[in-house]
Length: 191
Image (cartoon, rainbow, N blue to C red; front, side, top):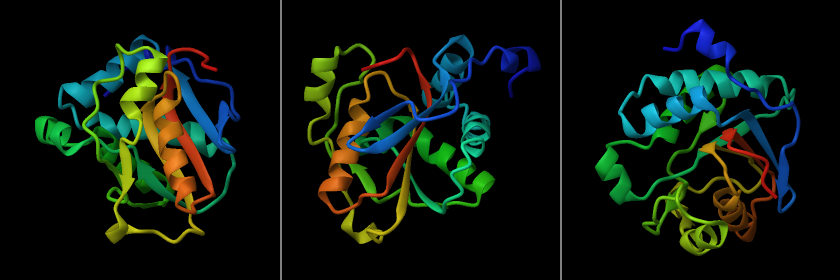
């Protein structure tokens, strides 16, 4: 998995709200440093699916210290069907499964959908990311959840907050108001 020496190198973020988007609290667990970068890339691009458990452990360890004590329905950030076909899995679905096991949460991996096949975000500037992700997400009405549910969106990295912003806007526009997000890492403090 990850050696003790590397685990000690993880730079955890201070406990508490990192940012708010449309009134929704965003929590970020760590800085996107050498160890976390490798963890994310190996899980996402190198088919090391067993790392989902470690990523979930890091996220749950941070999350449990927030003492939110709420019964969340977990929603993982979706990937487009073309990317899923290429990778064979959505890494965040795997993390969501493990996170839910640790916290006793329920999971709905099919409610959120990526309906637009977007470009990869990491080389795009903020204005390009906004354009790239505009109307990229949708809801699967067959998997609809009650509007009173407390939703917890989980993702691996947030650089500008645009992905979360688009998903939160979609959920709010469809009557979902009790939304929180938990992200493994951020490369820096975004505005």
